[in-house]
Amino acid sequence: MSGNKPLIVALDTVDTDRARRWAESVSPHAGLLKLGLEFFLANGADGFRGITGAPIFLDLKLHDIPNTVAGGVRAVLPLRPRMLTVHASGGSAMIQAAHQAAANAGPDRPMILAVTVLTSLNQNALRAIGVSATPAEQVLRLGRLAIDAGADGLVCSPLEVAMLRQALGPAVKLVVPGIRPEGAAAGDQARTMTPAQAVKAGADWIVVGRPITGADNPGTAAADIAASIR
Ligand code: C5P
Image 1 (spheres, rainbow, N blue to C red):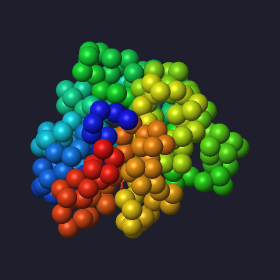
Image 2 (image 1 turned 90 degrees about the vertical axis):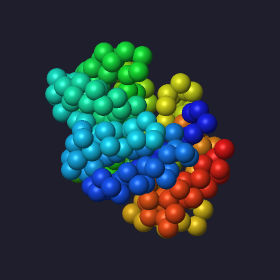
Image 3 (image 1 turned 135 degrees about the vertical axis):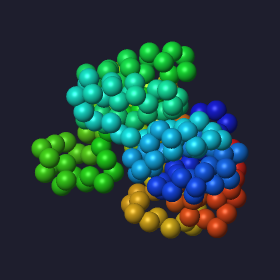
Image 4 (image 1 turned 45 degrees about the horizontal axis):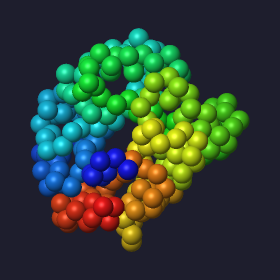
């Protein structure tokens, strides 16, 4: 587990006022706040700067030729995100380029996390894009490739944590979405774990969005989850 605040709250909205309110109420309980594609495309760097209270995980899942991904990483360094994501399927050279671009920021550099197989892809969907491996085999293959290329860690589903922890050892950071507190609606997340189960399985951080941001009182919801993994 990472530090004493392994909770990351996903602020998934294009509304900067709403994101700011969420950030204010959950920050005492969160290690990081996650801003994703929808927020960043709508609000850009100015929107990012308006979100304060905890370090930011900028989840853009970059995937392009190495030179372009390195440029993208350099472009967001002035915002000082604590974590950035890239697609492991972009390959070793692309991940190395992201790692090197981040390293230029010195000791405060963002962690580069790799996404392996999107949880929305099942075996049939993988076969359709030419991947004959099972989802688990592909996750492990891309996970190893990403770490060997300099990624600090991986974003993975709750069902992959234990396997990846065992295969890749204790130093690799594992960040785990698809979390649902006891009794919460699963929504569109098909395979979930509770916060405590994910941490027990080896997660360094858990990512929780709607169970917190959709709650009547997001601050209380975040506090309850933080207490459940303390
Ligand atoms: O609202 P919910 O708790 O499902 O939010 C989960 C967050 O984690 C969202 O921002 C989503 O984009 C992200 N995520 C995910 N599954 C993945 C990777 C990222 O749900 N495999």
